Image (tube, rainbow, N blue to C red; front, side, top):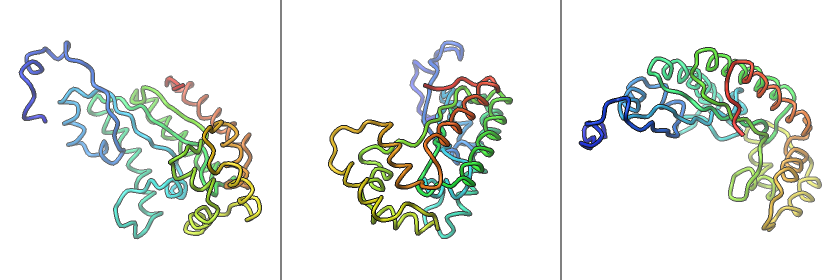
Length: 231
């Protein structure tokens, strides 16, 4: 793309060129060569779904880098490190990041929630104080039809298999079955109701209020760091 820029683009002074916004992965932005290419092409802001902080949480969200996933937790830790590296590389190349975080996942525990909170706050401190984060989006997990988390909500066997792979705990079979029957085949999904049932079935060690308070803490911290809160 860089070698075949159109004449109308190259004829424009840098100050008159459109500002481009893209979506990328942290491991891509952490590579200085790729980020330099993006900025040469006119990209000035990139959206990255950083999602979580704890390696086990990134694994539960199916986020680790690497195709074979021989050591899923090691790869998840590597992804967290890539998130931090991406902030440094973006700063060095004048690229802004709009970062997205999700609170909650299958098998979430109080300890995992606290680890996620502290690591996410650290990323926001780094991105905010360096002037890299243009905005932060943070929401409680919302299972949507077609997504893996909605499958967990409506298919107890799939949920139990996923939790077992990571050594995480979910509710007992009767609770899973009752909630699955409530949501299976529904055409209209009220988001907050689905979130609350997801917490009951798949995060029995935390409450919806715990997740909401964590979201509020993250948003308040981002605001204190001078970062815009996405709505």
